[in-house]
Amino acid sequence: MKLILCCDYGLDDAAATVDALAHAKADGYESAALVAVGGNVPPDVSLANAKKLVAHLPFSTVPLTVIDTTAEEQPFEFLKHIHGNDGMGDLFSDDEGFSAPVLDFAAWLSETEGEYDLLSLGPMTLVPRVLARGSVRRFVFMGGNIAEEPNFHGYEFNHALDRAAFTDVTQRHAHVAVTMDTCRHPLLNVQNVDLSGGGLQQRIVARAKEMTFVSGEKGCYIWDDMAVKALRHPAWFETCAARDRDGNLLNVAKYVLPKPYPEILEK
Image 1 (cartoon, rainbow, N blue to C red):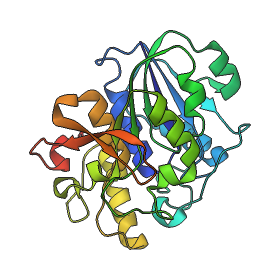
Image 2: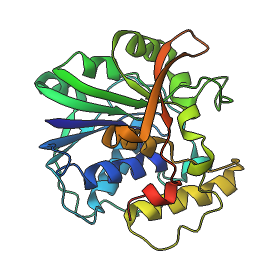
Image 3: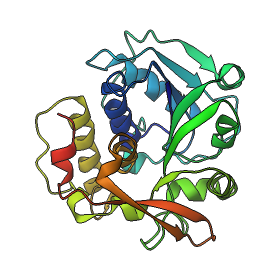
């Protein structure tokens, strides 16, 4: 069983990746692919950030492959005011020690077969092509909004950057949608929480909190890590069908565990 993560490597993507990889072997995965897509940052910056993150993992994990999507046309914004000058909080200066294989997206895709779980944590542009390969067992994504106020041109950011791909994927594939409605839960707001100490994931979350004060965000929600939680701990969520403003019918996850985010944050 493979784990595929499509991430536009900003801070919440980094926190989510650390969470997923820290438990990948225990969760039954034999390998993982980190598909570095454009979104929060340009594709080349996303690729550089994936390498830096992997180089600084303080634990061993399943065999990893980093997927280079820079040859693919993709939408993106460079949200430095939210994710720092390098797009990942300026936490890591280099990728010294990085040794995982890097494959071109098209080449990797042509060899993708068998069963996998897919986490999509950025825009959906390349996701239809991934889902056309092999056999997806569980597909969880962070994106979309139902009732929550949108955060980018009238939509949730990942949805806004490629509405056509978002509609295509949600209409044709079974999924669990971790929307803005899922994440903007009072228990999940860490903006006024002490996050000092702890390991790599906690450092990333703490930096995300710091950046919300710079950007003027009202609250700090680690959006993408909640998609990891929905994949790893489905009992923490209830799902319900709801339509977004484009008429897409989403299977929306609702967080029902009565614990605040610091208590479910891996130490």
